[in-house]
Length: 341
Image (tube, rainbow, N blue to C red; front, side, top):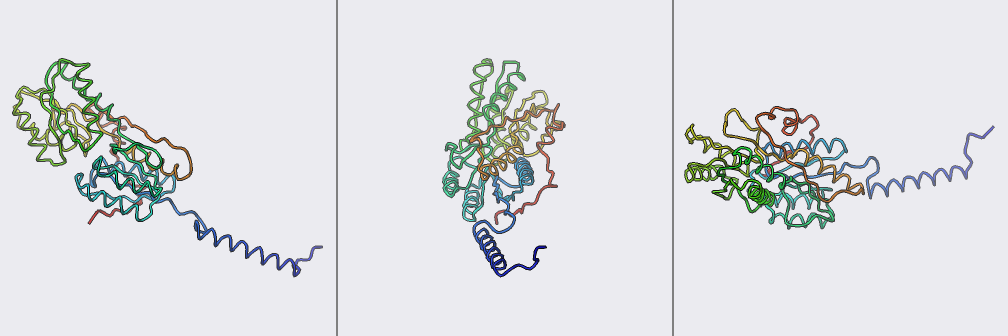
């Protein structure tokens, strides 16, 4: 029968083994933390707060975070044109040592410097929506709206609506957003190539200011009384255009192709609204968080992904697929909301 009491040598080995295990745990704690690994902290900074386009991205990011055990910090400027606030937020995230950053930039050039600071700190950074003026690679990744597809879709819808002949105005051109400039260029190219009977009679710069966009649309309508269609490239341009159309006589209907509205389109209240070409920000938020988790785990990831926008019409606006894009299901949400003071 074995002796249940350890000998002196056995007790020494047990004590030494326990001490070694304790020292290993202490070293592990100092480096990684002894016990379960802390969740990856990923900051998501959209263009603005309180906008359903970016709330959908929030839902997507939370779904991915829940799936992979990550923690999402969500914050945003109170206005799309508050570029300085967005820069300050990125710098704060970098200083606080987050493991990942998802950013929907308000401006293509101004956000380059803070993003460079983030990637220089080895923070995987995913730009969603519209790109910055810098190539992907290293710790910089893009999950973008396919604005080339958006431009083609808009040209095709205008061509079908006008049956190949008529006039169109292009409103809401914003040089600060690369994606909008891309969709503008492609729209003009496809229209000239496939629908030469349709003329662009007016082009206007856009802004995030609703009264400005309403006035620009009103001036365009007044200057071209026989105008057949308007392509509104920004959400504020869509709202301003639809408001301006209230003054158009009932006998003359101007068709509207819009982009990226902030809430589900109300076709019943806007008979001239042909469609909305909507970026899928929910998919962008979900894929961006999944990419960062994969990168942090040492897995290979694509440096750039494009997600084709969806054409929303009065026929499909109530479909499950469209509802999913706009869903505000927060059953998985656990992020703090702390808007800029």
